[in-house]
Length: 114
Length: 113
Image (tube, rainbow over the protein chains, first blue to last red):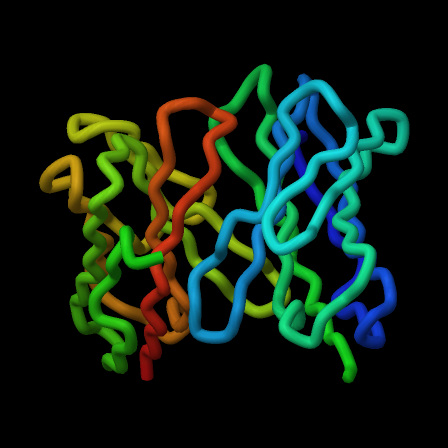
């Protein structure tokens, strides 16, 4: 069955330090993987996606994500965190070979301390 | 995302009432979706529509219905609201490819008392 897991409910990081938000997935075919960010009282905003090709994907606001097929992971990263990066982050996966449905993880709250 | 507009932004209603949440988009997308967000559960798909004549149930469609009035409009109805339908509801659109990202509205916060 298609699924996505975000093992951390919250990630705390100091401003200027690198950040990682973890995501693992399970699909039967080739995955389409997405990261979205949600700021308070707003809808989700698309950050980046992996379809095929280069395992390192670059997205908006300096974020990037690394696709690892053997570990079935798609972790979100940023070299230097900003206080304004504090938000709720969602990983999502679509099975490129079977269903049209997009499955979201439960979200990870990123808190960046000044 | 101003391209996807949801009304109302907030709504408080009583158990048993019928309520409609509306969504309109100016992105020209054929695909539209309704999601529900609950703390600790992420987003769950209620209904989706790939064009005006196409309506599909998502994973949690019980207690909900939808209407696709036009390419740009997709409304969600709760025929008889119950307290466990208290949640944040999002409308979204996407392009026609399965790898197209979703574009979300700002949500409707619904409280059923």
